[in-house]
Image (cartoon, rainbow, N blue to C red; front, side, top):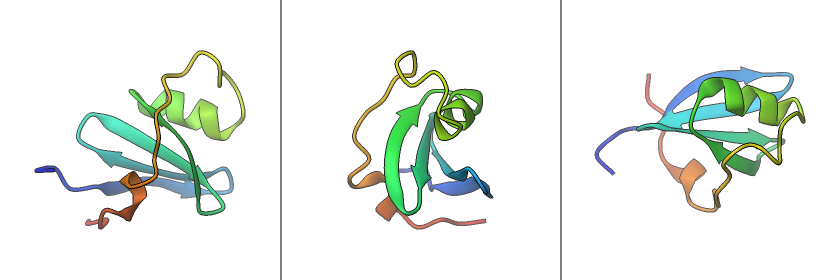
Length: 68
């Protein structure tokens, strides 16, 4: 991909990485979903709105380098 992944949140809820127009959420090193907005990703980490949030596989997504 032409866009580089960047860490946008890391805290007690988990981690969110942004790459292009997608936000990848993970907890304890395990991917939990892909969201279209940062707010959706935070809700996913908090365990809210999982059924409403667009989710896709993150098997390879978090393997991208994170640059500042």
